[in-house]
Amino acid sequence: MILNERDSRHEQVLWAARQMMTAARTAPKAKGVDIVEVALVSGDEQQALAERMKQLAVEQKRPSFERDGGNLLQAECTILIGTRELAMGLNCGHCGSATCGARGEGVPCAFNVMDVGIAIGSACALAADLRVDTRVMYSAGLVAMQIGYLKGCHSVIAIPVSASSKNPFFDRQPK
Image 1 (cartoon, one colour):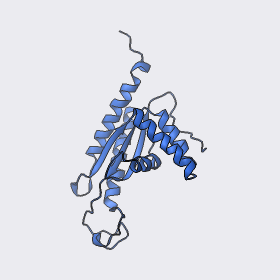
Image 2 (tube, one colour):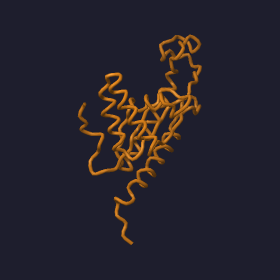
Image 3 (cartoon, one colour):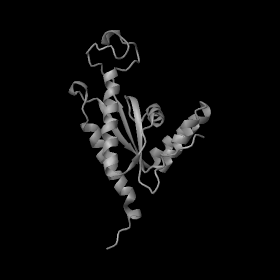
Image 4 (cartoon, helix red, strand yellow):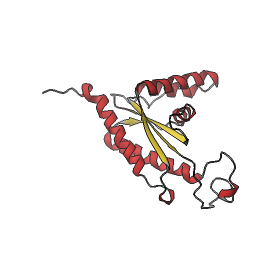
């Protein structure tokens, strides 16, 4: 049997992305409380996300959204990592309020946001080990959150995943 890498690349990238999702899941969480959500987007849903990003680029005059949407179209899939809201009750002040109870409406608990960051780091570290290309994108995460891809979550970040002869997320030119 002869198996050309080009014939199995999509399956291999999806496998790597699933492993990245596991890495995000097993990343340390504040107080051991798991409120992180992780999902994989591909196919029509990824296309819709990219198209919405391109629309917003024009509507809101955000050219980086067009560039990032184009990058999503070059990726095999995209991982989304976000968190549900839960104040950790540590009264740490990192959110800008003296206590968790004084935190304003819509202000996320800093530990929720840190949990997302740690999960992103774990996922991207594994991606590097697996030699797949990634880019952490707040823009695609924001749009994914707006269109409801991770319901009930905030601080959503997207990580498109690719395996090609040239990393599509490197040497990007602004539009």
